[in-house]
Structure formats: C-alpha cells, structure tokens
Image (cartoon, rainbow, N blue to C red; front, side):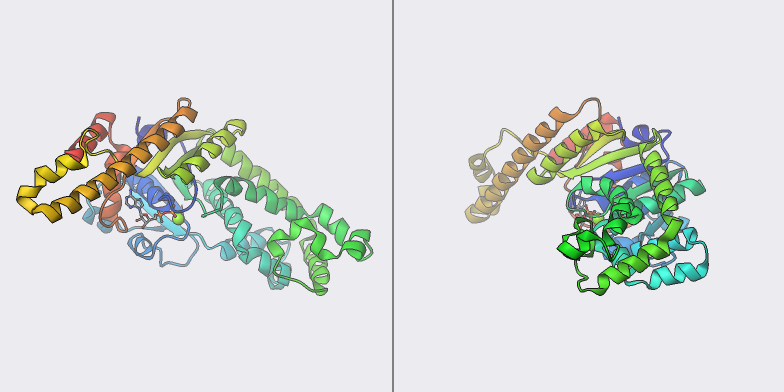
Length: 381
Ligand SMILES: Nc1ncnc2c1ncn2[C@@H]1O[C@H](COP(=O)(O)OP(=O)(O)O)[C@@H](O)[C@H]1O
Ligand SMILES: [Mg+2]
C-alpha cells in the first residue's frame, strides 16, 4: 500500500503528530506527490523552514493558497497536468477573516478586532493556531476548488491538543459559563477574582481589573454571533469526521514521538476520525545487522589506516545502535495498529528544503511495496 492508494477518494489529508518529526516536510511531499499524479492539490503549512517556504512560493501574504509555477515543478522533475498550491497559515488574519464573515456589520467587526480580549485571543499561540488551521481547512473544503487539501498541523505540545482546540476555543467563545460568571455582580468574581476562572488559561497574560470590563465588552460585541461559531465548529467537526478526511499519523522513530503516536493511535480509536496510515519519518535502516565493529576495522584498516578505520567503525557502531533503537520503537508502534499501513521514510542526508529535495521523499511515500523494498536494499548495499 502506498499513499496514493490511501488517499484515493479523499478530499482532505490531515498530518498529525508531535513537533519536529517532519510533519511540514511530509505534508509538502504528499501534496507534491499527489500533484505529480495529476491532482489539483493545496497544502496548508504552518511555520515551514525558511527555504521550504521560498521553494513553495509562500512569501505571498494573501492567506490563500497560491500556485507553485508549473515550470518550477518541471525543473524538479514533476510533469503533467497536476497543480500544486501552497499557503502558510496566518492565524491572526484567519481569525480576522472569520470575524469579518460572521459579524452582522463591518462596524461591529472593527470593534471586535480592536477589543483587547480579542487581540490577545487571536494571537495567543496556544489554541488559536489550531483553531484557525481547521477553520481555514473548512473554508477551503467548502469552496471545493481542490481535489485534495493537505493540512500540516501546528507544533502543539501534544497532537491530541490540536484535535481538541477548536472545540475548546468555541466553547470559550460561546462563553455561557464565563458570561454568567463575569457579570459584575456575580458571586464568583466578587469572591475569587478573575484569576480563578480556569477558562482564561489562554489569556493569562492579561491581568488587572479592567479585564472584567474588556471581557464583558467582548462578549457583548460577540452577541448572537456565538451561534455562528458553534454551527461552524459543528461543521468543522463534521468535515474532520467525514470518511473523505484521512488522518495520517506522522512520527519519527525516536522513543518520545513513538510514545505519543501510540497514545494518539489509541485516542483516535475512540473517536470517529479515520486514521488512514502512519508515516515513520527519519528512520535509520540497519545497514548490516550481522556486522560488528571489529570486522569493520579489519576490513578498512588496510585502505584507510588504523585510526581512520577505527573512527569509521565507531561511527558504524553508533549508527547500528540508532538503527536498533528505531527498529524496536517501530515494532512497539506496529503492535498498536490494526489494518493501518505503516510507511518508513529513511533519514536522508542532504537538503530537503526545496522541490528536488521533497521529490526524493516521493519514492518512499508513493512507490510500490517492491520499489520501496528495493530502494532500502540499495541504500543498505
Ligand atoms: N526524512 C528526513 N530525512 C532527513 N531530514 C528530514 C527528513 N524529514 C524532515 N527532515 C528535516 O527535519 C527538520 C524538521 O522537519 P519539519 O518538517 O520542519 O518538522 P515539523 O514540521 O514536524 O516540525 C527539517 O530540517 C527537515 O528538512
Ligand atoms: Mg512544522
């Protein structure tokens, strides 16, 4: 099974997993691979490395996907009628657009956007990125201009936090409990002070008495717009649960990300989300499980000299340890999977921050099983 088969008939692919494992790179590679197969594909990325952003033409600040020029794809060896589009998520702007869309008048939208609580909320790192990522996804899916949307997810502390954030944020915006609590006469405010309101976690940085005033104004301004937020949240959830949406778990083979992947796998089990498969990125294949350091030294000593040969052997031994660790971790993860396929992408040397670099990943993600086995055998040889 390869990714083209896994994504057959899907409209959305969400790449979930802990930070630093290669989610952004993998999302971009998947989008490139599906475009190479003739699709009109958009990837929504979050915080890409500078050079990857350049390669995908993400300097455009429209907060909409822009097309990667066909010549640039051709230069990287990707031909055909497929289209690759890319955008970098701008949470503040996505939030603003959402307010513009649901506010009853532009005057009200302006007032909300100028409100201090709103400004904190829309730029708070935790929560708003997650919320706006799925909000943008929903918007693009509703417009229906693309065959496939690939969503890179924010570097949340935990991947599950991402799935939960929209719900948490909408329930905050709905703010029923909070509103009641914050009525100036409310017993809660008088007795405990605002610091006691647990829902204010994301707003911790604001302190002081006029927070209450600001919050009251904020919720006053939101008024009956909160109905729109909840409707939207339900629709977003519907999209995430749709059989046309594939979740792809991306992880590296290190212990911690594997632990988190296992945890997320179990969590997804109880949800109505569809886990399509797992990508283990930056995997170290064992070069020669039988070989030991000693053998390497004697093999190379004649050609490299004793001391260099010893260094190579030490290096080889280190790699061997790494490879064994990776194999153990992947085996742990495999035990948790039912039918979901697991794709191994090796840790590649050299640069992956441009289109030819991304293209190097495609054979691992999109190759047939035989092709992938051959690649790995070649690498080992
Ligand atoms: N298979 C791989 N082999 C080698 N380096 C990789 C691989 N995948 C990703 N990288 C590198 O790892 C770094 C982190 O990747 P990135 O996609 O930004 O991770 P994330 O989005 O999960 O934080 C980048 O420098 C990227 O080029
Ligand atoms: Mg990233």
